[in-house]
Image (cartoon, rainbow, N blue to C red; front, side):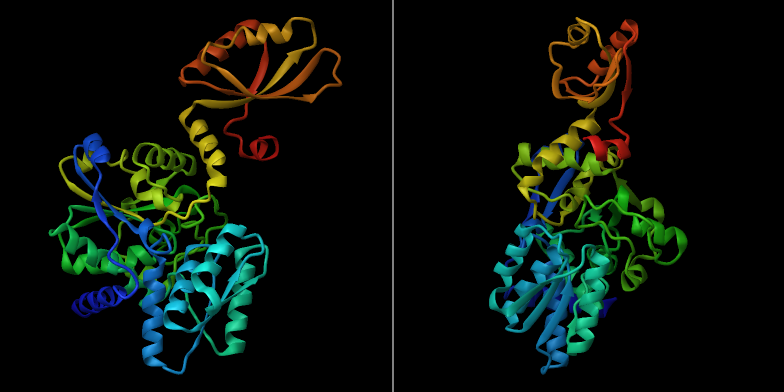
Length: 415
């Protein structure tokens, strides 16, 4: 452990060639809400707007020291790892080949190209990441290049530990609790390995998206397991299988220390951080803040560090984020309503709505029935309790309806 601590400090010093330490900021809004000292480690403010640059830089630095002749690195990524590697390739003046799925948004492709410049080549292949990964690894073997893993690499893990080095230096003392987002486990592995040696009194909580809980699954099984299905909304942390090296670094953890964040609830946190604090976070970057309400009793009076791991958010996704947040909060619902085909039926239904209810979607799904027509209706309100009143009125009037807000299959096709 002592060797790791020293090595992580050396890595942190070397990183200063790329960027200054990211801010550790006390958040007054969150601190007042929870009666605690809430500090945000702003990894969303690195040059590539995520912590991934740290691991990519360290792995590349160490490989070049061991093999000075090595000048070609390869990775597969649709997001932050690609941008971190591109930046590092340009810094070291080495060649980088970055494989990305064909479905990668153009904004992410353009940002990766901007960071890497002439040092990198982007190859678009595969509709799904597994296909992209297989193609990149085959190419890497053919070219004799070095494959740069996004998380499952000891040097990448050591690079991510620099986050913990900076936290202790900036805070001037050990925090009571550090909350870490988890995808493949690289950040959590590096930070916990460093702090367990340098600040053994610090406790940890890990946060995974509910649709990608690979750490909890691995801890419960005693080994990494492949999740049969993941929800890709939290794209920076939706990983189907924890890494081998990262599991070795985290296998001491209790599954109870791993908290799951529902994807729609994360959207509420993202909007609050944007609207109240002016902080732009991607879904994975909001994970550590999202679980604060769950930990409210535990953290009162304590010093808590939340690592906001990334801010690469495409604002074209903002309507989806708002929609998810409203549905989770109970402020927006979708119904399939059987509308009687008689004069005055629509007016009768509209009179059931309250003064703060707003129809955001109205579409006939079936118009051929003589007596009834099926209508898809979306309603937005200011108070979640309004929907209970609406349901009561529809039941009294004999309107048949079905709430499909939480039906993923129907929502995917209709909403």
